[in-house]
Image (cartoon, rainbow over all chains, first blue to last red; front, side, top):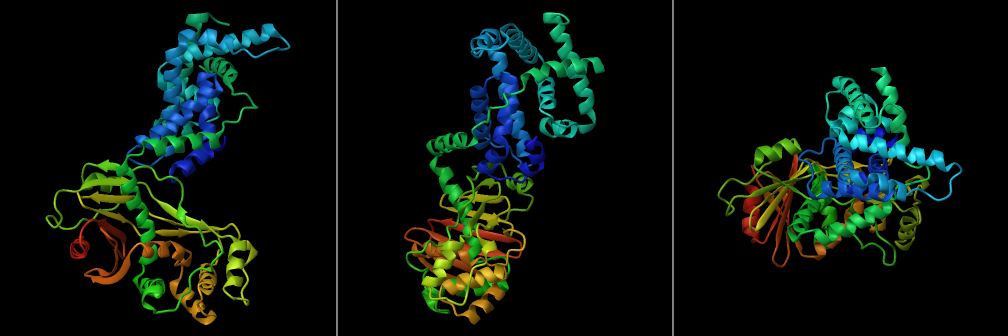
Length: 174
Length: 304
């Protein structure tokens, strides 16, 4: 992922334009994984930049990490707020004609289930799973989420376990 | 359990964004700018201007005093005639020097220690009691200003200036040259603000020949080939492309060179405002406020 290699550079970037150029698209993609809607993902990514502009962190060390943390938090908060509607929204956005409607319906429903499970998890655990699915390494996840690099593997294992437990509790083993 | 990881990975893979979707950073940035413009309070504009002035400061007094004097002489040509310099040729675009990006707004700091922790150097202030009231401290991230070399403009400027024995290397076209401050500390009293940075750094593409570029710009400004060569070597990396910007500055008021205990300083007088710009080995300072010349110089002299 391009943004991953930019993380260190992000620590030196000192203006919003440069941060937008380096991280906006990647951040929107990460948020998309959480919210499942490109328009909302872009809105929330822009909101993360706005928060950086209005209330920047006290240190410019790892501004990129700050942005991803904030973006993920916004995405997960959004998901928690709308989780009751999520199922219907997902179906309403189901695209037009598809080759195999039954398979597509099953896929969409499964996406909804995965997001509802993420919404039910601890925020940090959900963020770890999202970042891993985006291709982040353990050290990158540690940098973004401000975790001890040597503990990320353990945290991830716990997150996997928590996800599965919540999923099975809701929907059974599938 | 490895099983758990496989279980989760399979499900998380369903959340991949559509391959054809490209987030529109340009549109988002445009909206962001519009929002920022509407919401920016006046004091932020003012303090940002102060931070930006630190960038301007280097063209008047860069870190090395030896050649700072040369720069000063060159830049004061139009006013006191140390060297006869012509204006940039009419009808040719001069190098457009501007702040790069949108600087983030300054962040208030509780005290000197907090400001120091952010910028990683010790902020210096005038001795207590000289200026009325206690200063509010702010820090900003680094500020950068620069220009992009435009080969066609430079060649046209050379021709208009009657320089026929010089050509512009093709490799210079599009080269971005930029000056960067460190984190800036701004101390704001009711009527005056002091901004300071570590010495600025100059960046350009690898191998870019600054002396040659400086000499070429000096030729455009009417300096003879020998003198331009000599001045360019003396200036080292001094950016003469800042000349148009300095002309803007001087157009707003009158410039004067004074001597502080720490060395030479430049004082800019405008209608209601006095600005003092100076540098020492490890700092660049800009003091600016609605105070008279004597107090401005005294305050600059009292920075410790």
